[in-house]
Length: 405
Figure 1 (tube, rainbow, N blue to C red):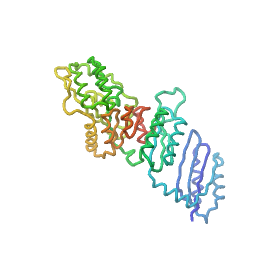
Figure 2: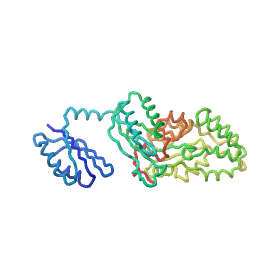
Figure 3: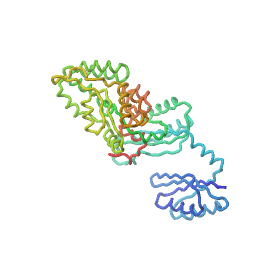
């Protein structure tokens, strides 16, 4: 019969603590049933659950040896006996569904965590593990563009997923933070293709609006763009109306506009990290191929599918060549690229901000509304509004130290 003991060691973090404890336990031929360690600043908390032979081991002797082995290290040792019934109940819980809750903000506060954990309790979820994925924050020269991320591994199955989602969205609005909730599956860190919308996603601009300004019809086109992105106007109709207003625009303005496009915060870091981690990337845009290819060269993106401007005698004709890249076309392109790469749809990620991105977001294994219009944010599986594009790496489970500049 095994005696089950939970050993907790608390004290200053330094080399040799785990080794000293493990050496004592090895002399008692202890079976390690679970082990976990956390270090915050220079404070160590180590927990080890062990099974030992009750005929060979007296609890007080083992405790005395552990205390003797760690006294010079300044470690406090505590014992908690665990009943067999309690242990078996704990083991049975391991089969329950697991989810990842990711908290994203410029700065994580106690209020955010208090409300987030209250939501998890309300919906019957138990927190197994809490990890900080973002880097340690310097108090010198703090930047308003800093990233902070805490990840919670939770166990259980919410009775009402929509109610949980509403609670997290309300929390996000109140605290100027983002909360992502996703099932913890093998695909989470094994997705292989990321497809981006371009305008207002990879770049902080709508190219068609910039072209319209150059053509002297900026206000008219911007109004139509806003209606389309908010889902109040069919994309194909809005696109045709905007394109007609560009008729006669000189081709020479394209290069200047491309060179001055503002790349979205975190885009370069995200693409660089994804590329070095073996991901493929694509631009699937209702914008224009010329500008997509410019970004492709600048950021190192693998594929670009967008609309090709029809230009005759150096002038924009107000039409595009070939099939218009609308929402349905984006979804079809995502599936086509997944097949080309030999992966499943579950291994794809789609990122966009407008209503015409919704089919693509729904087709992907992970759909992310980025700084999106209200309709899109409410409809997408996940949303990021407070941080830059590189926050996507946190949703994939990558720590700051895993990310590649």
